[in-house]
Length: 283
Length: 283
Image (tube, each protein chain N blue to C red):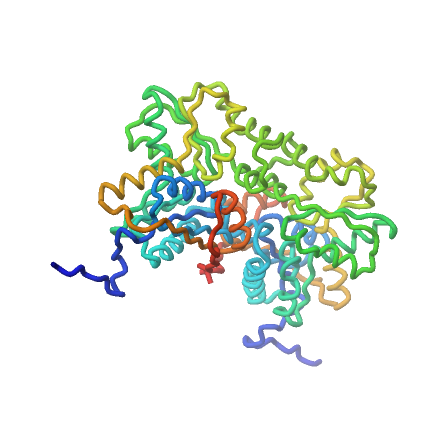
């Protein structure tokens, strides 16, 4: 029997099937991706980073988002992740190329690519797709580009909705303020027959029911958290890199307010977490 | 005639009447203070720092706000300011003591102290004062403490209003969403006979008219921007440190999106600005 080569401590890029999956977001929104990945890949070790000190990203410039995203990428590479999932649309829009370059042979998937694929799969080719997201995501035109790459040529309608993240953080997802805000942002969609609406921000799935109230039930709503989890499973299977040995494990790092994050995450994921650790990246 | 001692380059704390006034905030909100200081002290050289990369502060932890505030304080001390005005309530609440220690003999004034003084001056001593602000400001109890220091013993009612900053940044200050948001936040004030309401965040003066619509016209609304400008003038006069020579000058530094800041500031201040410079404090 050939002995299995053990990684040397200098070989930073050596990963095994049991190496963790890295997932990151500007704050808590990326937990929607964590939940979907836990369902799709229950044996994996997930390491999550939420940049809670510097949230929100969606109002920042491309340069600043890139700088922050590469600091987080370096942190997760030091944790020896076997695949990296960008769970933040603003980061995917601003820094996806730079992160791929930094990661070398470690594969990188992102919520924009995943959301675009799911939308095309569920839309008629002559039809119309709506996209809502933060100022940074919509301003970048990243969804239009991702849809073009998939040869989707029909009309794409985009709208930035900067108030939805603070509304979600306040827990106002279906009160009068939330409904009136959605009515204002989505007014231009109400006269268009959309095939599907991409929720281009990981906070937005919280508004799914309210969006249905405003735009009606006919619409297919695309939640990219599920799509990226399926992509990750397909990718790991195709490379025979899926963890079929260990029991799932979840480690959480944030840049501020670990206790608040722990409470929210436990409520959201439905089970207790280990200690959420605090890390300073800009010190 | 005794020659005037010139400052050596090592003597960092040497300031003259013509040295600048330093003003800082987490973002654009502190421009309300700049405008009031320009009116009250038209000859002064003002240096402003807006931390637009890391805005908003109001949702961050005390430790993180302190770290950021001291980085900005050091930056302004290197600019040789003769007095420092904290134009951000969240910073005043979290880091006022630490900033004063760091500044040594350079005086530090803040919007909380100024707002509390103005509110007491305009309230009956047996009466009631309302305070609205960010989560960080209200959570700190800083206004209660400032009012206690002034021996104001009547009842103080506080309410955090986290959505008002993003609403102001979106420009929604008097539409249906803004009014409904204010109605929800201010519901508990509607049955209390308040003498005055302190706007404990530099963004909130934008909602003055809408607050009147919700709470009525009887209320005295305290805008601490004017109060801190008057305090600064009194302080400089008492020390004979007012600039009575130069023509007023305004220099602006931000940590992200200088062009956006320039456009907003020019609209807000009503005149053209020099280049807004970008500075990275956490690199």
